[in-house]
Image (cartoon, rainbow, N blue to C red; front, side, top):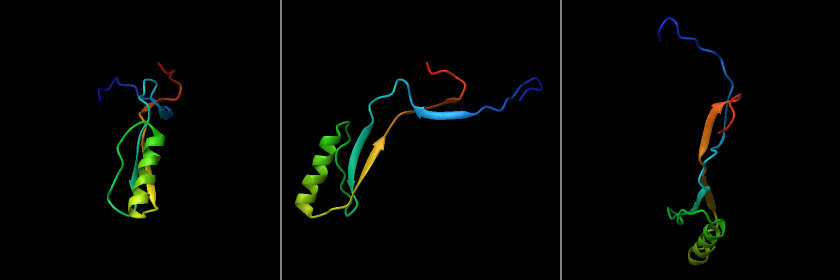
Length: 79
């Protein structure tokens, strides 16, 4: 840092990015390594899990969701 640099304390916040894509999600079986396809349709993700359960008898699943986030100082307006 240069001697004339000014630093200030600022509160930051994080939340959905203003120009975000729809959340991407998939369902993963907790009883085996299989995972459903990644997409934005929750019904398709649920259907994969139900079909997998019917084929394998597995009943435990994890829903994995990816959302674009944006960090900014709390007093900065979103663009």
